[in-house]
Image 1 (cartoon, rainbow, N blue to C red):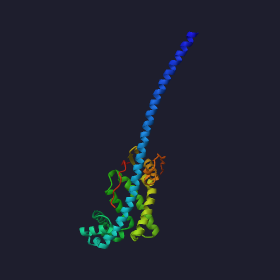
Image 2 (cartoon, one colour):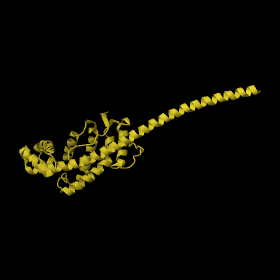
Image 3 (cartoon, rainbow, N blue to C red):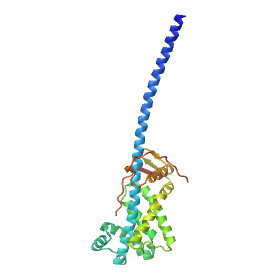
Image 4 (cartoon, rainbow, N blue to C red):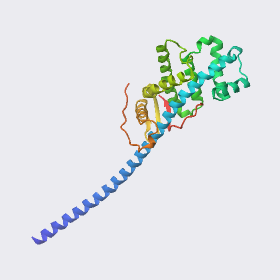
Length: 265
């Protein structure tokens, strides 16, 4: 009986040793998984913070560029360059100094507006048309990877300008404002656009590759954009937590680099 008891105790000791070995292996695997997850969360936080900065930068840049387009257009119109069909270097430099822009920006506005002005007259140069001119200028100065997001923003901006003019009762309401009134009105438009951007992204029907997230469809990317915007401006001033993603259902153009690439589907 003593021999049997000792043998049973030995067998139990072997089982316990094997169980401890398995536990140790499981602990090592768990530690590796937790370390990997921690690294992934840091990467996701970094991506959200960078996307947040890029979105707020785009929002600020777009509004300022639109104001610049309107201001420069009014100066070109007053100079008579549209009527003559050409803009001299001296005029471009004078208008740039007057409007706080650059001669290159002045030429960009002239070259975008003049063909339409020549074919359809000044009546065709509406606030919404100048919003399209702004989108073209912003896109020309953006990395190719950012173009889809600029296009989504541009569409939302156009619709907000259109809604503003309809409420004001004129397609030229913004062009007729003073500098202070224009800045205030465009600021309100840009704020509204930022909140509606996730829906605009959702409608692009594109797949997006985002660092830390991989390849995402428009619905998932829309949720990430919404989350990044919800962090508010300058979230790096406080510890950035990983918020839950809510997936929704159905100046010159100098932007911060937003880490994603896209392809149409």
